[in-house]
Length: 196
Image 1 (cartoon, rainbow, N blue to C red):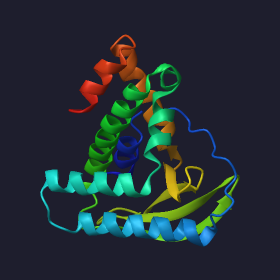
Image 2 (tube, rainbow, N blue to C red):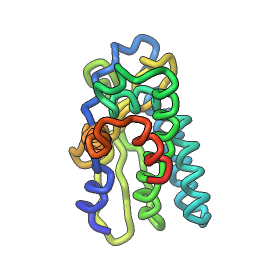
Image 3 (spheres, rainbow, N blue to C red):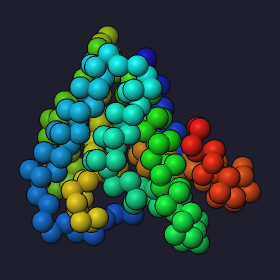
Image 4 (tube, one colour):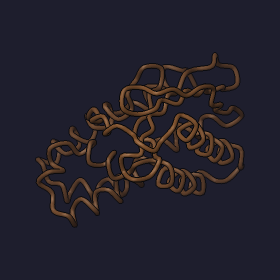
């Protein structure tokens, strides 16, 4: 697997995430500790030898535990999130969580035999950036940066930058395109995301 293919796979479609409000309680050490835990669980799943289906279940659990799924789903859906009913947003968020976990889970499965290592963390604007390096067998190491905030009331990551590719910005574009193909029918998109 090439680094370009990995980054492109991660970057399939998203709307730029608005920056969170300034973090008051979150510290750089907290942000790093959060991503250390997430990366530890990702590495354990990669090395587990589990089936593809079982790995996707694990990746969804990791995503729901460490990511601000609600904010990511709202940003990915863009303006439609403002007009959707509460029930539609709940259904979209749940479907999106499974969809994004399978999509990124399939990318992480390509790490089998490799690992991710956290190397640094620093304040960046109104949130923290945690720097990690992905080391794959037979490939040059490459950069993954995690953006962490406590805007939701919990310490969670809300974006990943892979070699300069903004995962959330591209994900929003992808969801927007999928919605356009369904002529703006959010309910149809929710149904399709469950099997995508």
